[in-house]
Length: 126
Ligand SMILES: [Mn+2]
Image (cartoon, helix red, strand yellow):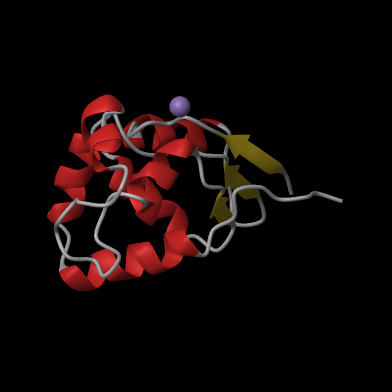
């Protein structure tokens, strides 16, 4: 059993999967994604969903996830008008992430937000 950490995937879902295969990541291992799964690259939402769907993976919130949560509608509607919307969409590559997010069903967007809001910014390892 091994513990892995990765950060700043920035939407590179295929590269992430390739990396998991390369290290032989298995069910007895655990992985912490320590922020910035989304933005700039093409598949950030898929990365979030992948981590969400795997019990042995967790996400710590990075500044990009933080901006997303401060931008999208808290009830999962496909609008982006929170306090960080301009910073996120146009200053930090959030526009590609928001496009992917809008392609989800309302139910999936709500479920993703519910999960994101329950992730920590840091974790103490003992
Ligand atoms: Mn980053």
